Amino acid sequence: MEIAAGKILCMQGDTPHSFYIVKKGTLVATYKDEQNDIQTKNLGPGSTFGEMSLVEGEPLEYTVRAEEDCEIEVIPQSLFQETMAKQPIWMKSIISFLTQRNRIAKENKRKKEFITSFPSLLFILAKSEDKLISLKTIKNELKNFSNLSSIETYKLLLILQDFKLIRLQAESFTIENEKLIELLYDTLRLRAIYKNTSHYILSLTEQAVLSAFVKAAREKGEIQPNGHIAVKTTDLAAQTKHSMYGMTLTMRNLESLLQKRLLQAAPQTSTKNNDLPGLEFIEKFSADFDRLLSLLELNRIYPLLDKKLVDGKTNA
Amino acid sequence: MITRDSRKKIIPPTQLCVKAGFVVSSPEDKDKKIILLNEGELVALDPKSNKVVFKILPGNLVGVGALLERESVRYIFQATVDSSITIINNECLESELKSLPVWLLAVIKAISARTRKINDSIRSAKTDNVLASLASFCKFYKSDDFLQTKALLQEFSWLTKTPIPAASEALKALIRRKLVVFHGDKTCLSVPNPYLLGIFSDYQKAKDLDKPWGPFCLTLQQKRILVLLSTLENGTSKDATDWISFFKERNLPINVADWLQIQQFEWFTEKGNHLLSLDLKKINYYETALKYAQNIKGTV
Image (cartoon, rainbow over all chains, first blue to last red; front, side, top):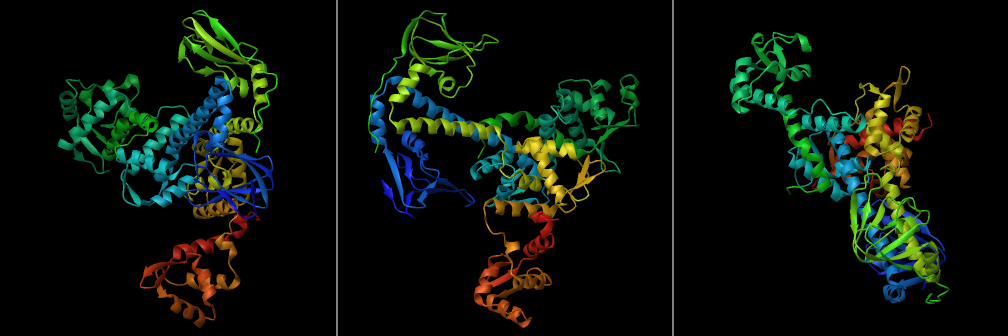
């Protein structure tokens, strides 16, 4: 087939079900991404394209235009099928194996990009000074960190919305819980870079005690001059027993929380193992209430995160 | 069109009937082969744990990657019941491939190359321009933040999957341009002007796409207009005719063609009623880019 200079051979998105071999001349393949940024590559003699269109009927990724007068070999699907019919059965299996492997590789790439772009999205949101961010802005910003498509970016935003970290509107979204986004990002960063579990990830006992503290603070908490909320030890112990199926509050349960400075005892006490005073010597415990709420929420969503990212399923 | 189907001497595949428990292929085999299961059942065993990883059912084949792509064989393939298999070794495959039409061989090679490219891209950095990406990363820090160099590189590398050496090179390029400043014995750094890093990143991206970049395309007249506009209040609104007259009154006469070109710089936003409102954010962007042109272009 001959094609004159300047003529378009095929368009991005077309499904010609054909394979092309350039025999003479040069063609230019142009690829337009979602932001209409154009990438080009030259196809000289010996170049081939359209293999996935021929075998799988996939749409073409490029628009191909002749840069000069060209000669092209076109292999239509009918010839492919006719030739394959003459091949031994295992040859067909090999080709279907190769196409299947290509499909799997593409899917793996998509999944990996999706999962690994999540921390980048959290980083941008955690550092952003604006609470209201347009979808266009976030897509552009994320493009600096990964090649995630607009659709996949939106899916990540839906996951964040499911966790009530953001609220999506038509063309923008609002950051609902900036503190939690920051905590989640730090937790993922520590896990990935330093292979450490963040001290924000609490044991079940720690979570139980903090939940009891939150309940007690809501009912009988006193606001301190530094903005923290204090709960009397007796109230905390009673709340722990009530809401945690008879669990008895001891200094052993509180030790790690005091060490992590998530709770502060009054009067102040040493948190070294051997120097722990009895609970009866502590009058009250105080904490940054908003921080505790964020931490408890972090501990609720953190175990769900990996599954949510792998499945990619959202409530929307 | 190539249509010939000249079959040369073909080495036929080997047909085998194997008993349950027979190992048909293992990672230690010197000769790579494709195994097609005709009847029966094979299992893939992990050589270390000897646990079953997956089953192969009639019609399925294994070893294509090993034979076509020279990949290593990861599993031991063993028959669990009496089975019938077809073994395609290297000689057999080569003889068969030689008999294929050239275009079909090209199709097979193209699909293989495409898969290899995808797999390579999974392992490689997520961005093409590491310098632009690092600049975008650094712009999120505040000018008074003192950052640990090693920790910053690790974090950037984790987010973008850029290897640390490549990230270090990009950091050096930002240091050379004075967009990032080292402190002490280079263990700490700071970003004196985070906003400028965002502008630099935009410049890099425009360069990648071979696109002219607005701030560096301004004529002398346009630069003078930019300076004039920077003295106005944000949101100052006029229609096109009034803006043209406004420039004329200040000895900056422009014609309609010049005006249309200026509008492409997005210094104005449409406000309705044909009014064009001045966007000082955009003006500041252009001014900053011009002020730090040497840093951005790397000619410091």
